[in-house]
Length: 98
Figure (tube, rainbow, N blue to C red):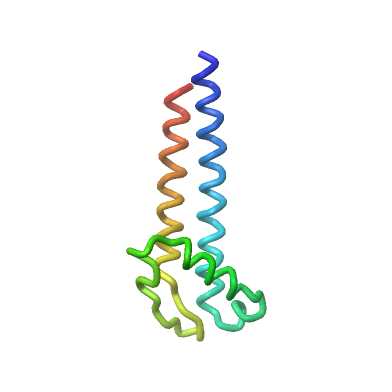
């Protein structure tokens, strides 16, 4: 019984971390849509590092110029969506373990 509780706690923590990662990726996608915001926040190095960590199959996929002077990064948006789906799956699995 204690192992199930421990598993549920671990899954809850993992779900929380995935949710934070998804929110952070969404904020980065929004910031990149506006060229002025991305320059003021100086997130170019962070974006380059994130681009290197994304799997090669989707890295650089769907980079579209936005009407606000920046770019919409579909690959970052896709990673955010994957984080939210994994968050949901971990939350459901945690509830099933209780």
